[in-house]
Structure formats: structure tokens, C-alpha cells
Length: 244
Image (cartoon, rainbow, N blue to C red; front, top):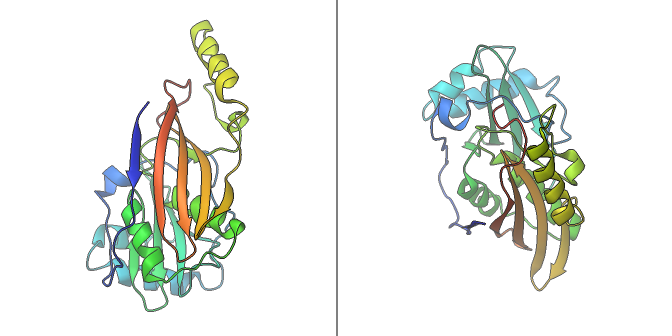
């Protein structure tokens, strides 16, 4: 069992465009299922594509160049709680190394790359002065946070039950026994993201299948947009296709 914690960072005043490396942070194919219910940008796609490319050109020219290919898709993530900005799921599914990353684009033309950068997401909430008035908004914020900050180096997806974990096509006896043990131990606990009101905010619990590990996220979301995440690995060695 391992634990990690993401704490709230200070309000960001400048554009944060952080991504470890094009083929490090974003070099894997997309997760097996979409993590948002957004639809591809339609009539305004050309304008959004141009504004995003311009926003990334100085600090991330490698990502900006991807957008010159019309086959690269930009899918907006529904975020009505995020004023003045939209989050885009960008997928370049070409060549031998598909690239996927999440980025927030402001109305003023600033960009914040969120992939593999939880602190950037926390800073985004602060910079946008996000307000979280109810449990459903808290759930939506956490779901977006978990989707957008994935590394895409292994299969990673939120799960609402163990039935949603994509196992290998066939399991040998040892793998089946190990999986059966996980189901017996955690099957009743794994559930869709849920929030409970407490004090000045909400306690949110979410589950993620990240590679061959099953992770519980206990996320504290405050009414003024603060977010802190405590992770607990509750199962390892899951019989899943770890690499995309």
C-alpha cells in the first residue's frame, strides 16, 4: 500500500504550460473509454484550434505543431463550473506514437497543459476563481481533475465498479485467483464518484484503475475551489493490459 498527496498550490498569475516531455507525458494512446461526455468541437473548431496553437507556440511549439494536422481531434470537456475557460481533450492518433493531452484554454488565449500535472489543475481552479456550491459540482470537478491529469503512459481510467476494469482477454489460474480475491475484498467498495458535504466543502471519493493498480482517491474540495487529493493503492498486479 502506498499513499501520496496533492496539496493546493498558490494562485497562479501567469500562464502555466507544463508537460514533462511530448513522448514522456503524452506518448500513449487514449484510455480505453472516454473520460468525459464532451463532443468534438464542431463549427468553432477552426477558431479554437488556431487560438490553442497560438497559445502553445512559445512555450510548447511541439504541441502547437500537432494542431496543424486536421486529423488531430479537439474534444471539449463539459465544465460549466469553470468561468472564462474551456478544457480540451486533444488526441493526435497518428503514427506509431499517438499523443493525447488535456489543456485549458482561456477566453484571453492563455493555455495551461494539465496532463500529468495535478498542481496545474489546482492552480487553474484558483486562477479561475471557481466556486463549488453543491455535491454534484464537487463530483464534476473531481472527475475532470482525475481525467485531465492522467499521464497516458499506462491505461488509466475512472471506474464506478470492478466490472469496468478491462481485464486481459484470458486469465490463467493464478491471475483468475488474484482477481477473484480483489473482487471479494473490494467489490462492494468500488463505486461511482460520490461527494458528501462537510464544513466549508465536500469530501469526494473516486476510484481509478491506473495500470495494474487500483487506487482510491479521497479528495477534499472546498466551496471556494480548493482541492487536495490523498491517494491509496488498494490492489496491485491486476491482470490488465497495462500498456496502451
